[in-house]
Each structure stands twice: as structure tokens, then as C-alpha cells.
Image 1: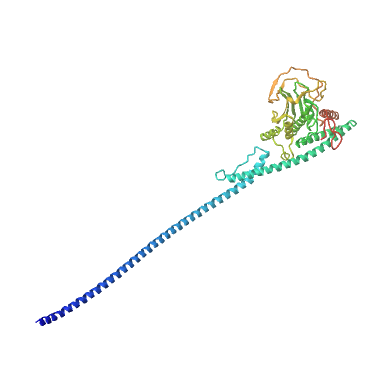
Image 2 (image 1 turned 90 degrees about the horizontal axis):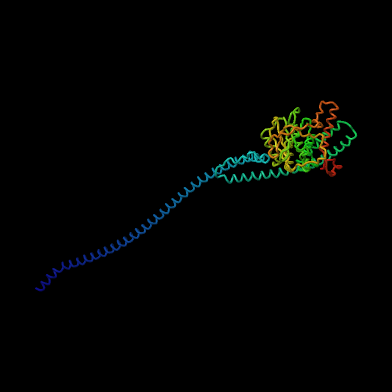
Length: 483
């Protein structure tokens, strides 16, 4: 039974064993599958981790790419900025080039204006101060440096012109002084020889020759004054009326000159230091009056005495002077204007320049104005400090006009304005000579008389003085110093 049971049990245990084995197999298979699944899971985890690493690497790469892209974008922006800056620089350079071209063109215009307008006007203004000197063409801002450079160039050019002008004028004056000195010495010798011949030969032609020698000597005296030399003649104090007659005898048109003496004191004289300069100035005034008026008209001379000096008023009936000529003459006569030998014209018009130099050096004055006679009036003013009285015992020249006695204009040397003062009538002197007659068209006797009167006036004009022997000949004759 037990065996049966055991056998039954054995028979029943077979399937159970198979089931157990099967279960064990299934379990093993499940374990294997579990192991495989675990392995797969671990592999998947590894792959996941790898994927995550790759993802992280890709993310890093992406971030790096983003950084590179950002850097590239920044570089692109910087490049664009540089491009914009380059464009701006190019536009700035173009603008600067345009400005430079504009300034260059302006500088060329200013240089042309400087050369053709400003420099000639500036050099002209050196001798004619009222000449306007134009300024730069462009007076707007931004050209200060150019204007400063142009003004510096203009100043340097004017300074160079002044230096060269002074050098040239000094050389001309030196040459003129030398020539005037030698010619004056020769003329003085001619005068001395003529005086000797006249003592033994009675020929009116000698008087005519002596007269022309005196005219030439006056011209040389004027040249000496212009060149800065002493006129070559000294005098004692000389009556003013006699000085006027002496000046008359030095003028070619002397016969047309009418002198009227209105002095209250007949012996009123010019001091020795100024006598010859006054005579030279009067001769220049009378020479101008006769030269610039018709040969058939008179030249009226009035000697006046005022409260502070004396006047010699000379009126001609000539062509007169334009306002600008009067103005220029006034500058020369004042003695303030610069006198240049090269600016006196061709031929030189030196009369007013000579008078102005003498006025400045010796202290008398002269001015010109339109004359009531239609020509020019010249007024020579002698201040009181240049006047004196001659010795009452010394005889006056017979040729000097005597003071007139009728009511006449009396001038004050202070303002040169006429006033009228009535004088008590006196009997005119009978021995007063008439004005010198013209020798033209006269008889031989009248001509001889005229020339004799002229010679007497010339001798009166050569009154007195100390003289030294000249370098080119014997001692100068009376009234003249050797140059």
C-alpha cells in the first residue's frame, strides 16, 4: 500500500518535478531576463548618461557656438562701426580738402591783391600820407593767420622800401651837395670877375651877364638848401624893405614886381642869423609868382607890420592852384612833410620845399591861399624874435620903397588876418624911386638906367659879412661865404 502510495506519489511527483523544473527554468529564464533587463537597463542608463553627456557636450558646443556667433556679431558690428568711421573720415577729409582748396584760392586772391593793390598804395602813402591803403579782401573770421602773415609781409616790404628810399635819397643829396658846392664856388668867382670888369668897362651887357649869374647862383643856393648844406651866404641885420628889393633883383621877371611898404618903422630889420634865409625864401616866392602868371600882369608885394611881427604878402594874377595842390604845398611850407629829392617831379618843383626847410630851420613861417587877384597869395610871417632895428645913422638903400602914408591894411603876424588902421597923412618923399622899368623895348639910356638900378639893388642885397676862402678858388666876394 505504501508502495502503491509511494508509487502513486512517484507518479504524481513526476509532473510536479517537471513543473518544478519548469518553474526553476522559468525562474532562471526570468532571472536571466531580469539580468538581461538589468543589463539592458544599465546599458540604457549608460546610454542615457552618454546621451546626457553628449547632450551636455552639445549644449556646451551650442553655447560655445552662441559665444562664437556673439563674438562674430560683435566683430561684425565693430567692422560696421569702423566702416562708418572710415566713411565719416572720408567725408571729413573731403570737407577738409574743400576748405583747404577754398583757403588756397583765397590766399592766392589775397596775394594778388597784396601785390597789385596794397603794396603800391602803401608805397605811394609814404610820400602822400592821405593815400588810402586798402585792407584784405576777406574780412570774415577764420583768416586771422593769413591776414597776419600778409600784414607782416606788407610791413617788411614797406620797411625795405623806406630803407632803400632813404639810401637813394642820401646818395642823391650827397651828390647834389658836392655839385652845388663846386658850382657855387665857380659862380662866386664869376661874380668877382664881373665886378672887376665893370669898374673899367661901361657896357650894359655886363650887367645883363651879372644878372644872369645871380639868377644861376640863386638856383644853386636852393639846391644847397635841398641837399642839407648851408646856403653859402651870410649877412648883417638887414632892413626888411631892402631884403624884399634884394629878393626882387634875383628874379627874372623883376620888372613886374611892385613892392609897397606899409611898415610903421622904416628901419625894421631881419636879424643877421635869418636875413639871407628870408631873402632866399622871398626870392623863391617871387620866382613862383612871376613864373606862373602872365608876363603882362603884375606881382603885388605888400610889406606889413603887426603887433607880434611882420608879414610880406605876395599876390599874383596867375592860374592859381587846385585844392589838393594847396594842401600839398601847405605840408611842404610847414616844414613837417618829408622832402625827398626823388619826389619833387621832373623837372623838380623845389620852391615850396626850399621855403619849408628854411622856415623850419630858422623859425619863420609861410603859407599859401587863393589870392583876391585870382592867382595865389603867399604870406611870409616873420615873428618878433627874428626882427630888430638897424642903426639910425646907417643910410637906407635908395631903392628900398619908403613907407606909404595913406590908409592901408595892416596885418598881424599872429593870425595873418587884415585889419584897417588910419594913419595921419604925411607929405610923400620926393626922392623915393619908382619901380624898376623894364628894359625891353626901351631906349639905350633907359636901359642903362634900369640895369644900373638893378645892379644897385643887387649890391644892396650883397651887404656885408665875414667869409672864408673857398676850396676851389680865391676868397668869396662881399656878402658870400664860400661853400
